[in-house]
Structures are given as structure tokens and as C-alpha cells.
Image (cartoon, rainbow, N blue to C red; front, side):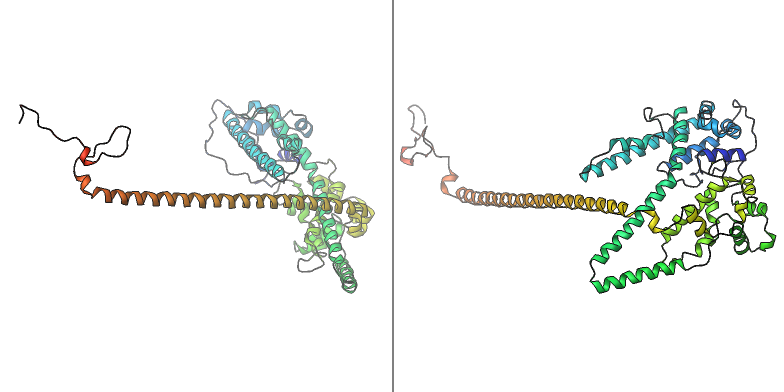
Length: 454
């Protein structure tokens, strides 16, 4: 489904949400408008990687269904959206869709409450200090003071949060990769420490051989250059490089036909170049590094071609870039990357000082984990001791119950024997007051005849 150019600009502000709606202007009389009550399908737009991604996409797709908001969206520009002018149009959204948005917000509030409770329990249970400010940041994309209804402030917060978070998303990915590389080097050095001198030398030699083998690959073309695009044109599209046409190339690789290259479409263009360097079957090639390389290629092209910094490349921006001198640059990616200081060289990712600090952090975490493990072990031992005491008490109680039952059984037998004696067949023996023993038969009262009575 094609998207309008104006709607794509909303995707720009929300930074690569890649919305899918029609762009035909609609005039609506809301008094006659009828809405279907059936549930909308789950959002189909690309994931952003944000922790509130589903909520973000569902809100946008519900808003797309309202003709008034859709019309305003087409005519909005980036500055108006960032300043909150588009958010104010929420007041004119049909009640049916406002109700749906209210439901989405309540669901999101419940999700966040459960998420924060789980994080709080985990951190508190591990003996860690709970960072309440960090937990509260989970609510920045909505107005948590009003947990029941979706208002103008909620839409405004959602747009601003998505804009800020997506701008930092690449940085977070770079930081994650840096930690990954430092951990990998740390583990390698720890592994060497446990070896004897001879094995250590062999392992170091093998490591250097793998690095050389990884570096031995065909030339990687500068991303976005004429040579790189012609290679895609020839190998992926099966066309003659001599017939290369930038406009045709753009239309062929604009996979959703919206008139823009989004980040995913751009990154797909670099696959052929990356396959020259990385092979999942090779020991020396790290696929995590390949994805970092892909990210850096995309950022490099965006910096050169995306002139309005909206994280999308329009056809006009693309065509202008193909007319620049850099487009015909014959330098390979590695040469250009080193020149621009964006090379994926392990030595440039972190310094020795950073690695040492990282190792100190790991050591501290290991001590904390060990301390926590000892505490848990002591708690387990205490629980086991208490369980043993309970078992002993239970055993004593069972023995006492058995003794009581045994005594009851003996008493029952004694009573049965007494029931069968001659004494028990007549009247009960008389008892002297204050004495529990019955009187002898010779002292018991006898029936004496009274005069005048027979």
C-alpha cells in the first residue's frame, strides 16, 4: 500500500515508524459518519525497538483511522508537530477512536505498573539500590497523573519521547557493541592467563592469524557511491551497470513505494558489501560486528545524503547526492571510514584505560554476586536448619499422639472387662459422701419391712 508524502513526514517526526495509510483527501460530515465497532488488527508497522513500541504504533494506527486527524496530518509540517500543534487536533478526533485510545492508555499503564513492580522486586531482591528516578522515566511517554483517558498531553508526550528516544537509539546500540567488544577482549585475556607460556604463544599466534584472515577480503565499496550502487544494480537486480539510472534504482529499492528510503531499506543496500567481509561459517568473522558495520554504513550515508535530518532519504535528496563529486569517489569503505574516523577497528573502539575500568566494574559485580550468593547460601542453610527442627517437632507430636491413642485403647479394653463382672449386673454400689469407695455389702442399706405394709 502506498503512503502519501505528507504522511511520511509524520513518520519522519516519529522517526522511522513507517506508517501505512492512504493519502486521498477526505471531506467528512461527522454527523453522518458511521464507524465500525470491530477491533483493529494488531499494528503492522516496523518495530522501533522502544520499550513502549507497541503502544506507540497502536496509537498512531488508531489515529490514522480518524478522517479529520488524517487530513490534518497530511497538511502538517515537522515544526508544527514538534511544537505540539498536531497534538491539539486530538480534541476533534471522533469519540469512537478517543474511546479506543483511552483503552490503549489504560492497558499501557497496567503494563508499566507490572514492569516497574517486577524491576523493583528484582533489584530489591538482589540487594541492589532501587533507582526510583530511572523507574519513573518509564512513564515519560504518557501523562501518568491521569491514568484513565488519552488527552492532548499524552499525544504530545508520545511524539516528543519517541523523537528523543529514537535519536539516542543508535548511540545506545554503539555503546552496547562497545561493551560487547570489551567483554570479548576481557575473556580472551583471562583465557590466556590460565595457560602455560607455550600454549599462550600458540593462542596469540592463532589470534593474529585470524585477524589477518579477516582483513583479507575483496574491496568494500564506499556505501552510497556509484560503484557500490552499480554493484547492487548488477548483482542483485541483474542489470547492466552501463545502463545504471539513479531514478530507476531508487524506485526499484523503495520497497514500500512511499517515495523515501527508510533506514531498513538503506541498510538492505549494503548486504552485498558486508558479505565480502563476513561469513557466518568462518571462525574469524563475528556476525555481531557485521551488524555494527551495517549500522555505521547507514549512519554515514544518512549524514551525507539526508540533508533535512529527518532520518529518511527522499528521491530528490538521493538524486542530488548522485550528482556530487563524492558519488564518484573510488576510495573503498575502509579508506573513507578511517579518514572520517568511523572505522570498525577494535583498537579505536575503546582505550586500555576504558578496558581496565570495565574490568574493575566486572570485578565489583562479581564480588557483589559472590556476596549475594553467600547470603543466599546462609539463608538456605538457616531454612534447612529450621526445617529439621520442624521435622523433629512433628516427629515428637506424632509420638505423643500415638501414646495417647494407645492409652485410649487400653482404657477401652479395661472398661469392657468391668462391664462383664457380677457387680455391674445389679444396682450400683452405694458410696459414702466424701469417699470414692463403695460401702461393703454388709453395710449397705437393706430393705426393712414397715409395719402395716406388706
